[in-house]
Length: 61
Image (cartoon, rainbow, N blue to C red):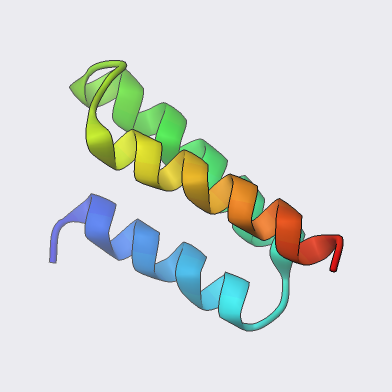
């Protein structure tokens, strides 16, 4: 499992545990790291930022 996949799985696990703020932080940092390493428009960064939005939405429900 590569680092990005592993970090995405970690953020998903934190989200599933109900810690939406921490999940949003993990997704956000992952998205920024992906952009820095692989370019601004890497689709995996978009996936990570969608995770941020999803976590924020869940935290307000």
